[in-house]
Image 1 (spheres, rainbow, N blue to C red):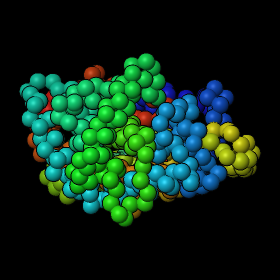
Image 2: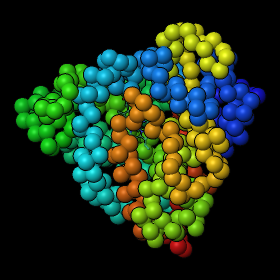
Image 3: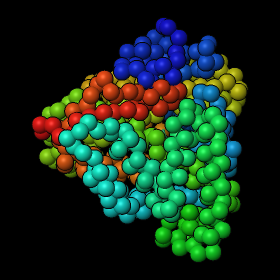
Image 4: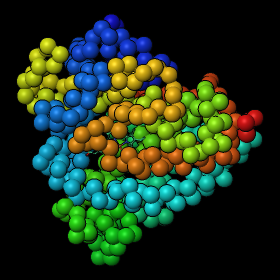
Length: 389
Ligand code: HEM
């Protein structure tokens, strides 16, 4: 097999034959150039996710080992992770997320109202990118006057590869400063029903523990990092898959109640997070090989989700697949905290777009995939919206 370079593979139209080869021939692969082990079968990815005692997140969960400055849920291990997650989980209940649905729909409608369906529309900059960022500023209670600057900084952080670079660092500082400035105001006037930051500052009695200011800032930042680009990528990937399956697209436009299952299937086939990594906290044997403490193991969700051992006709899009135990939101203690919100954003975003433009046509020449060690999605997706249904 020719080396494994996630940065190149995530951007390919069809990385899946290579994943298949890995599953069949090299279920545990060592990438010399990245100095990283890779597991690609469903059972091995699942076992790794479920064994947080052996497989730590504390040294970063991307292949490069990048770590942000503030305490971040996603890159902490128990017992500290348990404390942080206990303090925030109530703010993300499915019930609370359903209450956000009305706002998500208003934002989607506003964005669609602003496009000219007769002209070419760049769906990334007009729809798939601003929708999740607007939902996040809503969730965080960012004031309307600060939204544009907030979005500029969020974009600089999110769209810089692995969050590095001077622009990203400066944008991160702006967001930290912004949140640090609003925290004292919110603490005085906190109404936990109103927004997430207030709720974190004044947790309800049944919440487990309270966060320090630094932890609240870190949490808000991880929401931006974990909750926006992933959802943008999911939405773009689904629009792309549906365009290639016009019969399914027409069915979903006519019967939006079929969307939830179809969305899960699209998330399985084109996982917005193709893979994440862990570091061994002790010497451990995997598939007969010894992995030493401190070595990094990459879990290929994009491959596990197409493992025939678990998913019959795994390469096929079956919009009624049920059960569909894909790993696109992870599993175990780090299971995606925003999964309900993401599902709501995807369903509502697709309902609104398909209701108006069931026959949208993508321009392949002007659609580009992002290159990333972990994420798969489009950074440009040009479409003619008003097409024949
Ligand atoms: C389709 C969109 C999304 C996908 C595919 C996705 C995927 C994931 C995955 C795979 C993980 C597990 C990380 C790990 O095991 O290391 C994760 C964790 C997380 N996600 Fe999402 N996510 C999405 C949307 C969101 C949204 C909208 C939010 C916030 C509102 C969010 C917040 C988080 C947080 C805070 C974590 C860390 C949880 C922890 O470490 O305990 N995600 N996500």
